[in-house]
Length: 475
Image (tube, rainbow, N blue to C red; front, side, top):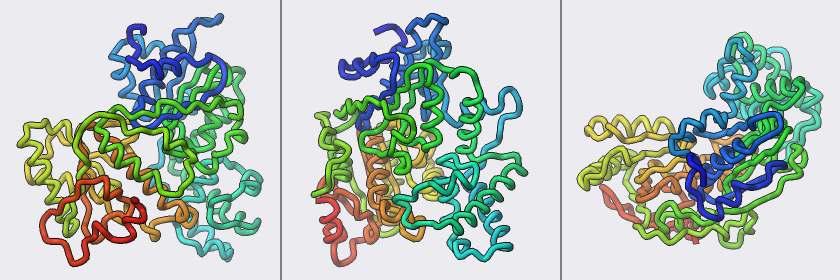
């Protein structure tokens, strides 16, 4: 292996040297080294000589700042491979030397959708306008923006399979009116939704004479929206496209037809199934979330093995209340410090920003926060920590409560909760501690795979660790 290339196993090495032309989908389990192989693949492609000069390689990564570190800090990496998030790349490409478009935050986007909805309600009595704000925010984000609809004629043929409801022509016109007002308001603010940048970049790319890259390597490809998948396909039109995705995750259901995205030539490669990053008991518990009795093994989950690394079972600390969870967190960090474990090795994870804020404030008061990482669950993909302390493992987070879900999300809420919890659990490389409130703990938890203990007040009559719903969900 050349200097600057990450150390790889023989199975990983094969994937690095896939052909330099064509489209490939590489799927692997959590901890199988997808990000490492993706970077090594990008470096390998950059070193392949071309008639017109050096290969132009784009490496799309969720956390591009960590890519050079995985390449052992070799300066040549920056010269060989352009590493970026897709959104940041789109910002630069669309700006073309001018002002970089500002991005709308999730909160800003929701506020603008609410204003747009109010404007349309003033002039229309369409029944669809009586639907809650969440319907319009998700329709705009996951249908119109995600599929790149620019005109009403683009919206009318879009199938709504799995959306939980159908829309006839008249309701769609009302929804599209809200979308038009949303876009107009965003332009007035000189801001753009991230997915709109992908559409703009795709349009500019189509107007160009030649693709800007010879090869494109995409990590965490399952997180891309359909319009983003179309964009990376266009960027790689001159050479190869390699998509890396999690074996246990799924592509956007609206992007499940890769043929419609022009990716029908993909050589599907399910590889790197063995988890070798952390203790087997942690991964065995995480896998129990996904391997439900009687469910079809559509993603090849049986190929994912927990490995042989020894270690303790993940612990589930049951508390009397949410305040008890915070007190238990303080006790755990105090224990870890007493064991002389550096606080920099500890990460506190939660699905809610508010819970993380409470955790940080609590540990600061106890003078235990310095060095501890406080990470939202949505930012943990591709990252790992020696000790993971996961808060609020309760109903309402895993899975999310029905009141917080759009209609089309409810049918898949259980599976989405399992995948989110799996992601959180597999971030730990040495020790995992879960915190939940005893009366509301998540029914998805694989109780038989956990070391369960109680903190604080005694449990109420009827032990929650043995309720029938839990046994059914985790058997």
